[in-house]
Length: 331
Image (cartoon, rainbow, N blue to C red; front, side, top):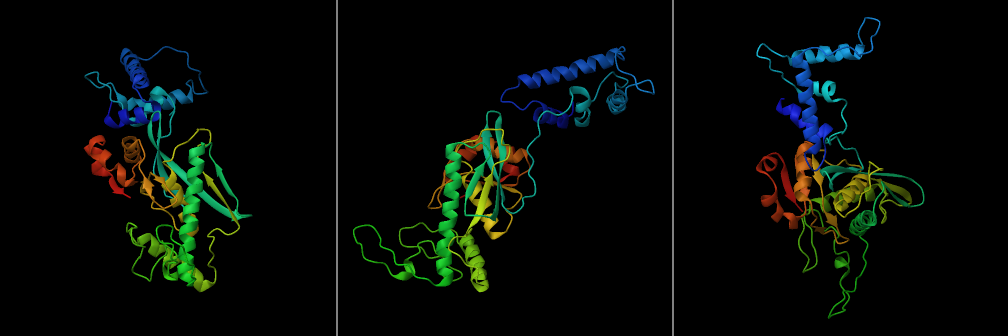
């Protein structure tokens, strides 16, 4: 069996945490090889108008190149497997071109890591948020958190873009009222800089600059609103609705899907993300980093965004082959 045939046998017929099913499938291929070396099997196949079942005829034509050769050796390639072990049972995860409102997350199942797509769409309505996909309570809370975070970020960005002032009282030893220009703690400063109050960790300004550019164009058109979705209904869906899902790992992916929907810009198709998100925009560490990165590697993903606190898990848990093909970014 070629290396490609072994990989396909694992990913398309025997997805599991152990190797018991793989052993049975390999034994099935060996039994086919023994029968082929022993000679053609007896009758029993239904005959068509030409004296042979068309399905059998097609299989024999495809398997003719397997051999045996003069030394009695058989060669099995990946495209021979459906004629030997039957139709594919599992559909392997593959990265696909993402549309607006779709982000690629990463999750962990009993059989290992897998891609987790998050889909978001909007329609005219009453401002309702709908979440579907047979989700647990933690995952539903992650969706609500991502929506609230996005709304707050854009609310302050709108204040900065429209020049509105909103004094804020800081809770602490001193309750003095702050100047109006510091009212929005995460608002975007004039183009080219991002100013935060003292004590807050500086964050990269690229995303804030994106919000600034978008809202400056909205102000120019007269479409700026403190609520980014207005009265539109927003529907967030996690495909494979028959499979129960739960956990906080999809928080960042949900925020990206909603931001993509709002900005009308697709997320990069070669990038997958994982991490829990907070209302302050912090990304918290999650588990299953090894399984998630390996799932991204199998699917052909080139960039993976991980929580910064999970950086310590990378060198110890991930094989060098995966690290060589996947570029990791910590946020």
